[in-house]
Image (cartoon, rainbow, N blue to C red):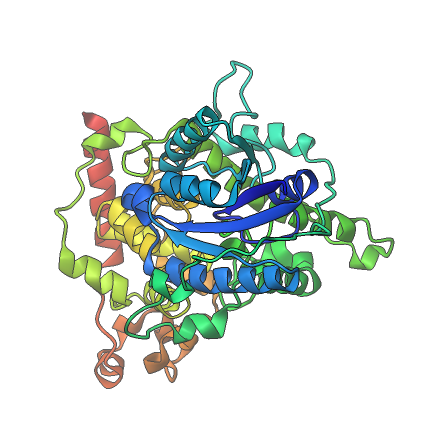
Length: 472
């Protein structure tokens, strides 16, 4: 019978899956395949938190497929070799997959596509993760965008209300042995530290849809204001589901558009602020595609001469552990370690503290986020860190240094977020909670550390370094 392989990567869902739908329409039998090949990702192979998520997402995808009379075939090793062996064993005539946009993935997929076609196998790839391909949006000069606002002005009018694809009616598979056990991929930690991740998340397509429904019911109407409040669930928290492809931006846009069309004006939310945030995700992928060197090199080459402080393993470790003595920074870093996630505004603040107050290179922070975030994404991680550092496309000016005290007073005025993640300070007054160093007795009683640096002096040092770079 006519058989095709559907190669799952970061598209771990059944609904709105163009490659799966096309394969199901054109072939009588499907072989759903996942290949574990971390060596093909170069230096950016998945961090510990991402591997945890991947394990559970693969498990749930397999369960979904079994409900439809199929199963996920797991393999590990060289992707081309695995595909060739499976094609030879099963007689499959075609391979379908969803495109990825990281430099290493593009190089791998191009080589595999050429090799398989040379041996007479059909190869079909599809866009399953973005509204538009990175090469479809260009300036009037037919080049890539470097600034978000004009990029969004070009992209937004193209976003007609989509009709996401349903789960194919038939996903009939074949009898196939040789799949390795999921545990053999060794994605879970050997020493359990993942209790907080279990409490916070439900990986998989069902969990993604449930969280989208919660966001639509409880948060989207107040998103423009509540997204800045770390103590509230005012953000969507959909980023890990999007990264692993358990949900598509088309599905989100459809539900947003349906809400915006509600005949009851009292229930009709302004969807533009959230659509714009999804636009930043598109912009990040646009930049990574056109400027593939930026995960490890400054977008703005002027920053190649920036006088970063000498790497301090001790300072970086205190930052990682949430022991800097700056409450909002420490709360964010502890939230990250416990849940694998951090509120977006707090991400900017902890990054600013590392890059500017401590003057440690942004790559040290990018690497830590990569290892600890469940939503670690090369495009978004690169854009975010270079944006804060001042070296990226459309970056915040380097002289914009987030003041953690001012930010905490503005966005966590009652200290709810700080008390949640800094339990040793739970009994402190709001005034002291934001500036613990004003009371030596509080520090001694709680065991909370004094600040690593004085915020004003370290800010002045950062600005002096910036002026030195500019003077060159």
